[in-house]
Figure 1 (cartoon, helix red, strand yellow):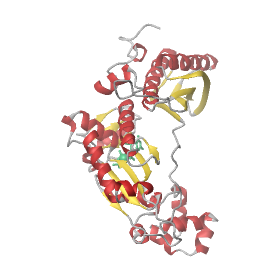
Figure 2 (cartoon, rainbow, N blue to C red; figure 1 turned 30 degrees about the vertical axis):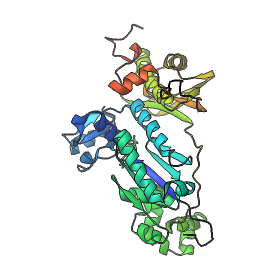
Figure 3 (cartoon, helix red, strand yellow; figure 1 turned 135 degrees about the vertical axis):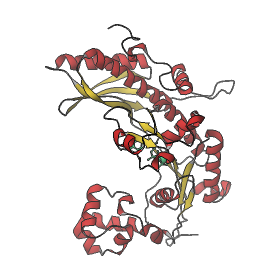
Figure 4 (cartoon, rainbow, N blue to C red; figure 1 turned 180 degrees about the horizontal axis):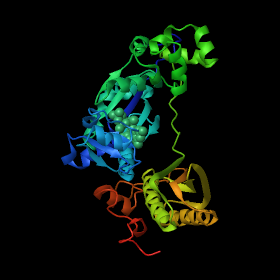
Length: 395
Ligand code: DCP
Ligand code: MG
């Protein structure tokens, strides 16, 4: 159906995996299926990354302190994240997304917009594509996802939110403003905490309240932004799906229960973080052009140190060697060195060009180490430096 300005309507899918990290854990270990699984930091200052839908019934959710999750769900199964594994599954689902259109904009490991406007002739209606996509993900990855279907990104994302879990939900242009009117304003793209507070103070709680608010009121509350927010509230959004918005950096960091005050401890932690980040780097088919350390010393002073890599690379040992030098130099320059948080991240350069080999084997940039970890769990194979002292090398 042509839209009022005679442009053919776009067809956008928003795909979001259900309870992604937890679902991967439940798939890989059938004994976990049906149980409340909580993935996240398991230490004292740990935070929940996600919870299976079984655990959500107990009120456990992303970003909640793990300690609180344990109180709410004492029988929960608490697991540390296996980032290399999730990155590998992410690469598989993104391959499936691209079977429906090359216009894929990833938002995170488990979430993407797909502009399927031009695929309609070949693959049928957007709803048919959403169904086929879900089915492929279920068959090839044994995972559930939810697909939102609409004529723009804003509505497609709101639709998948309404369809969760394991659903397909379409919001057509003519239903749009009525369907989204009941949603809280926080769900509207660009409405953060501060904007929400300001609007709520003026009695605007739901998207419908925003639709009804006068231009003058919105201008008074939000300035020139008011008008664009009103358009969003009506379900209008012209943003294109931006294909090549690739991740620019990949990293891993950890906050410590007790500040690290020995260089040896810090190096052991650095090795673990480097392994984790390097595994994700290789799973994403990239090379690192810059290594960056994030160092937070007590009480709360955060610094960064970085170095360029020429040529760019993805080998754990070489990345670690570089990160180690940065850490040792920083450490030596401190009067009383101690770390509250340590992070390592890599700035990426373009995709490595991969070709299937002559025997048609699936191309992979996963090192043998990553493949072993993917199969046996992170920690199946680790560098000796990252092991507790009794297993690790001296010095
Ligand atoms: N994640 C995280 N920390 C957060 C939020 C999410 O580490 N505060 C991670 C874990 C999630 C993954 O990102 O599995 C995807 O995030 P989603 O918001 O899509 O949440 P889920 O996929 O877990 O659940 P659902 O999409 O079904 O609500
Ligand atoms: Mg998700």
